[in-house]
Amino acid sequence: MKDARITLVGRHYATRGHRSVPVKTPGGRLVAQVITKKTKGARCSDCKCALPGIKHLKSSAYRNLKKRERTVSRAYGGSACGGCVKTRIMRAFLLEEHKAVKKLMADKK
Image 1 (tube, rainbow, N blue to C red):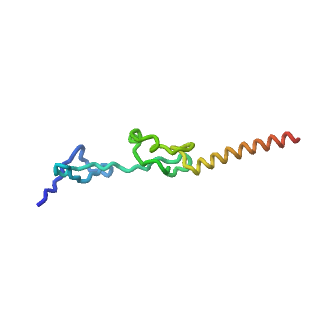
Image 2: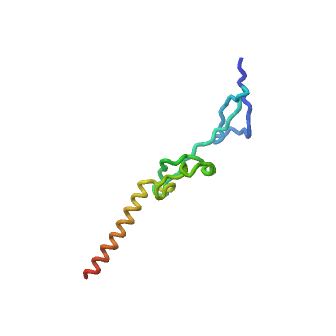
Image 3: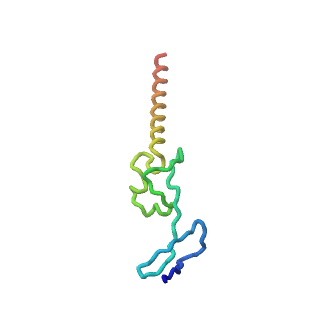
């Protein structure tokens, strides 16, 4: 009969956020491996949707990633989604156009 006993490693309180699974080591022992929790990931600063192209990791784990895995190569790459950046650019452009038209109308009078 197989030995199904698991060797616990680290702290052992089996809470909802500290789960473990049995993993067989090269030596043949069963060891409890702690599962890290999944995170919501990076969110858009305007619409709060998840940012595509950026990994869902804990804040401390981003330090070990390459820069290309932390951001997207675009204006506001790691903080705003593409749709929100598009609306920001459109709003800025339309405001400038409005100012120019206002000035033109004032000059005509």
